[in-house]
Structure formats: structure tokens, C-alpha cells
Image (cartoon, rainbow, N blue to C red; front, side, top):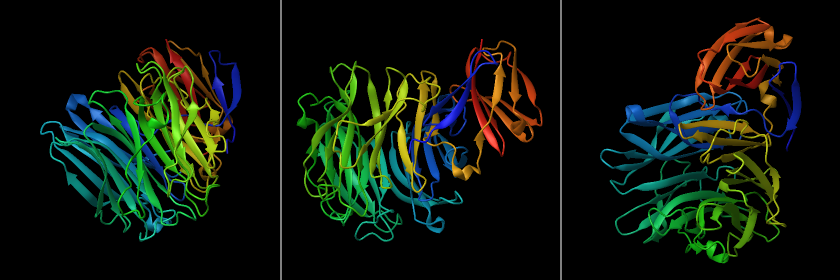
Length: 521
């Protein structure tokens, strides 16, 4: 874990370079696009392949869509599996999970909320793809809620450790929705590998308002049946910024009823009614924790002053979560900065909880981890640098975290967003993977930097001997220049037509890559 990568950053004078070590590599734009990208989600397969989905909005054409992508080389390159954009439609939420323990059985499930902004109709669906070829298999679940709003959707699977009664594994869907009398949290489960979703249970109802939800699967030696665990927020009004946090789980089996919801923020007098954005993760493996059970962790934003000026990253944990409700408070970061929108997972390989969140005060993503026994529940290992290399985001990136089984790498995705729109970006803990056939970070000099008219790129010998692709993107991920190089050592590019600002220049060939920032003035 936390392997170091040496990256060379070229400063304003081309003869000056600084080399430094960090745990994460250069940011990658998952899918360059001129559309506003939203709500990115990622999932990883048993073999380390990574899948991503993000919603898109084209306001000028009154269209909304979803783009689904796949990377087989650790996030270095991405290929689009499917992309669609439909007039008068907005995709309010999306989530995905990949399941299967061999490439022959590898299946991708994508769930989304389709909202027709003209008729007001909401449709919840689950689409299935062949995760190897990317071919569309079919839509396995469709629920038309009419004009009753569907707020959020989550999808999860137990394929690494199938629950009792599941064959070959189960896939669970959780969604929050509105009716004229109450809001609901509903679970729909397939115990036949996602072929049919027939087991429906109401998880919770309220006369208030449900919004964001989270879903995970937990199993241990003592909790041998396996269960799905959920967390969600309940707001006192439709416009409320914060509210209460609740959690529940299957009573016994993954297709069974859920226990009475437990209110978590009531455990701490300084958190009551001040929380939002819950994310849940549960331990899973052929072992128990030191309390003979499954460990569950829920992280939240806590609005300390109640006015939105100071959010802290706090949470709750339960080390006997498969048969009791002994929840306690924990703190990840309780400071004067704004810490927002966490995501968390459990990695069986290292028996650790790993989380990421956005420090909006310093415009940086922060990664933290803790042992699943939580011997020090409020002491988390932290890495604050190296993730979002170009911190142009001034809004909420809503980061997501995934773990590459067998390769022991953490994968991150987020929306780099400002007032003009967003773009989905990716980073990985050990960016140079063995799967890249020993691709290396190549030396490349850019000068002058800042530049007004002509930008010169000087390549090292290894880079210049091969056909190389040069791409320049702006901070929103939009491609502004593509150049194919064939043996040049020094290249001159006119940047007269570029607007003033910061750009990313990227070089790729079969042997290596280089990423550099430059400023056009």
C-alpha cells in the first residue's frame, strides 16, 4: 500500500524541474466530452478491471444522458461501453456494480433514475451488460413511479461471498422515493444473479423527506447468512440542508425483511438534526472481527454551527452489527475546515476501511483509512495530497472510492466542477500498474511556461522514438488540441488561439506517458 511514484513537474523555466514522491498519480479524464458531466460512480471487478458511469447534461439541446466506461489497465486508459443522451430526459441518479468471479461470468449492472422533465414521470431501471465485450444484455428491472419522485438509487452485490440462498450470487437495489402521504426507502433483491428482481421490502417510511441513501453487504464467520446494510438521511423539509441519519439491515437473509430503522445522530447531542450525505461500509470475509461479528461504519457531513459554514466529517460504527444495534460515534476530521461528501469501503485483502472526502477549504480530496477492528475509531491514517492535481473544483466533487482486488490499489473518481460545469476524473493509488507492460512516466520539458504564443515540447529519446499522441485539455476536461507525433524530439505548437488559463498536456505511446500543466497568458 501507499507505493510512491516519482512525478516530474516542470516549473515556469524549462531548465528547472522538481521531482517529488506521492501515493497517487496524475489525474485522468475518464471520458473527454463537451457536455456537463455529473454524478460519477465506479466499481471494480475480481480481476482489477474498473468500470465508471457518469450522468451528462446538455442544456442547449435539452438532453440528459449516461456514459459508461471501462478500464482494463488500472485507469490509465478508458473505453466507452455505452453512451446515450435523450431529449427532455434527466438522469437524476446512477449507480453500478460488476459481479462474477471469472471473465466468462463477468456482468455489469447499471441502475439509474430516468426523469422526463416534460411529463414529470420517473422511471427506475437496472440494465445488464457483458462486462468483457461491453454488449448490452437487457433491462432486468423497470419501475414506473409516474410523477412520484425517485430521489436516489444504490446497487450492490455479494458476489465475492454469496449470501445463504443466493445462486450464484445476489444483487440488491435500494431507492428513496416520494408519495403524497409519505417518503419511502425500498429494497428490491435478486437472489439469482441479477436475472430477476422479485424480492421487494420496505426499509423505512416517513412523513418527512428522504434523500441520499447508501447500501453495502456484510458477512463474517458468525454472520454466515450475509446481510445488506443501508443508511440514509431524513430531512425535516424539502429544502432543508441537513437532518437525521438512519440505518437498517436485513433481519436474517438478504431477501428478507429489514429491522426497525435506528436513528444514529441521536447518539451525539452535537449531531442531532445536523447531518447529511451518509455513506455505509461493512466488513466481509471468512473471519470475525474482535467482537465476533461484522463491523459497519457510516460516515456523514455534520453541520457544526447549523448555518452551513463549518462541516466536519464524523460518523458512527457498530462492531456487532449483524445481530445487535450497538452504535457509537467516531470522528474522522473535526476541525475548522469544511470537510464534505465522504465515500467509504471495506477491503477484504487488507481488512481496512478506506474513505475519501472533499476538503472544500483547501480544494483537495483527502484519503483516510482505519483497521476494521477500529481500536482507535477516531484516529484515521490520512493522505491529503496527490489526488486532484488540478484543484479547479469549487463546488462538490462527490468523490467515490473503489478497491482493485488482488492488485491492492485504491481507485478514486470525482466530478471536477465549477460554475461552468463538471468533468469526471480518476486517480489511483499506485497509478503505474504491472498491467501496463512497465509503462513509465517519461521526461518531457515544456517551455516557456507560462506561454503566450509558441509552446515547445522537448521529448526524451525513449518517447521520441515511438509514435506518440499529444492531447491538450482545459480544466473542464475538454480537448482543445490533438497532435500525432512520429519521431520528433522537439515540437512547437501555437497556442495563440487558446483562452488564457491553465491546461493539461498529455503524451502517450506504447512505452510510457507524461502529464504536464502549462499556463497560457
